[in-house]
Image 1 (cartoon, helix red, strand yellow):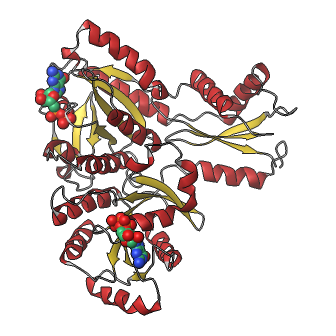
Image 2 (cartoon, rainbow, N blue to C red):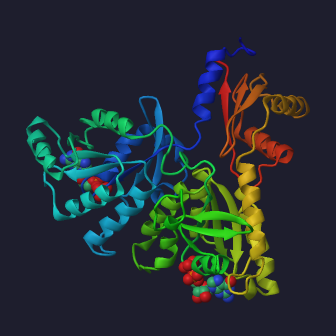
Length: 455
Ligand code: GDP
Ligand code: GDP
């Protein structure tokens, strides 16, 4: 039945698009210069140019949303890496390892004009061990004469090499068809199959904020080795820790503890690891060093968690070192720098003294509850009806766009679709989001709002 000018089919398809929930993750790995970034750009196509118009954000990103043949997924790009950090083999391997771990399927890119190198062989070993589905991309096959180069890559033992020219787009469609066959409908590495298992926490933050100290403090004696527990996946980098009577899975604790402190080029490397942890987690605990000015790097990490759509808690660490003056300035910084996540529960802790450690779990639980909140359609529309009559959209060009009805298409994080009679300005959409939060909570979770305008 038609609902105020939208036919049922339209409403359904809009809900399906908005309510997708967590997307499966594809990692693109390979040696430097084989064409990973070129390929990623090809895969994400024009979409990214539209989405990412904020300066300074694009460069640091490692995950993107993509769509092929009507299916959506995330792409992890490992192309931003700098060669001289660890030496080629170690760097490629470490990068690939993080990316593969976070992924549901992998595109392994090899330069067909060069052929398989020792480094390529090393990555193949990693791929075998990980046991994730792999699509082998024989890149730089710019024309038919280079197809023979691609065939040589059968020797890698990864199945049929897909001849591709990332630069010109040749063969990328066929390759993406293979990718779709390899990707699960729902992300198995993270959400699928773990229903009822321990909730997954990513403890993230820039170097030296105190992640390792905090982990040690909260874990105390209660640390459990994951693979000793029945029914949990064998994953050496995740750790089960009991807190507040509940068992939690801290993902990628190896990354926290290994403490390979890299100098130059370490930023990108750390971003990749953080992004991988965030993808695997349901809730991100973002640690900020309260004794220092909130930095661009802190902001970037927050953005990563928000864009991944994770529940979120902000923990200000090293509270023991703060004097009154610093506390004053910190509050001012929070007001100006962290406005966009004013909804995130905040705890002021000290990993050194143990201050307020007991507040961490309630904050995490609050954030997860917000993340999973579902508002019944009836309540939502009663709320929208009141909102629209009390605060109508400003009149534009003699017309007044109206929200006709809305529905929550999904949770984790909450996603709403509003059906409207005209374009809703960004300011009005923000207002609606603010009011939704006032009415229904959503503490600790980003919310997605999409608007469908009646043609
Ligand atoms: P990455 O380091 O693996 O991310 O590689 P890039 O995407 O930066 O590409 C490295 C170089 O290879 C660049 O100069 C690209 O223009 C070039 N390249 C990438 N794909 C192709 C391709 O399909 N054919 C040719 N001829 N060059 C390519
Ligand atoms: P990570 O790089 O984020 O894992 O940070 P670490 O846990 O290694 O901590 C970096 C430094 O900060 C170490 O010297 C810690 O002893 C110190 N540190 C961590 N937490 C606190 C805290 O709550 N108070 C104080 N004063 N120092 C801390």
